[in-house]
Image (cartoon, rainbow, N blue to C red; front, side, top):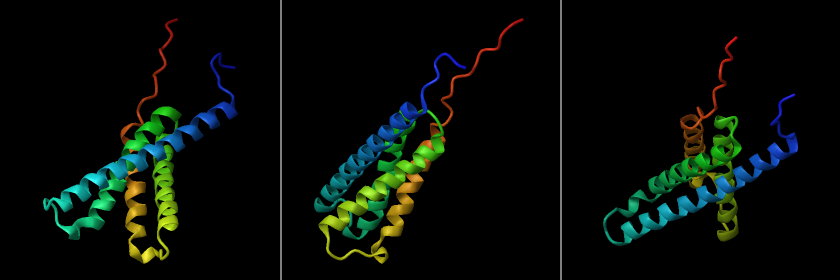
Length: 140
């Protein structure tokens, strides 16, 4: 048995809190990007026709930032943790959308937001996956 082995429940709690914090960070980054994009549209720097594309870019950037945080906090299975963080972001966006708007449908752009969130989280998992400490070889 290893000396520094954690209990399974402690690992699960640490990873669960990492996923939730990553999802909240992803939502905050997404909203900050969308706020900056709406200011650019109001100022005339960007066209109003780009709103859907900017929303998808915001999901990708948010999921990437949240995925990096979640992978750093969980420390294992980086690809899965990043993917789940993207899913958490999409569920948060879906919940906020359901609370704020009466009429919601998949045809109104939910698929693009889902794929943007999942791709951003997956990219975070792939790019930060190699942080495992290497074991030192014993000399005999």
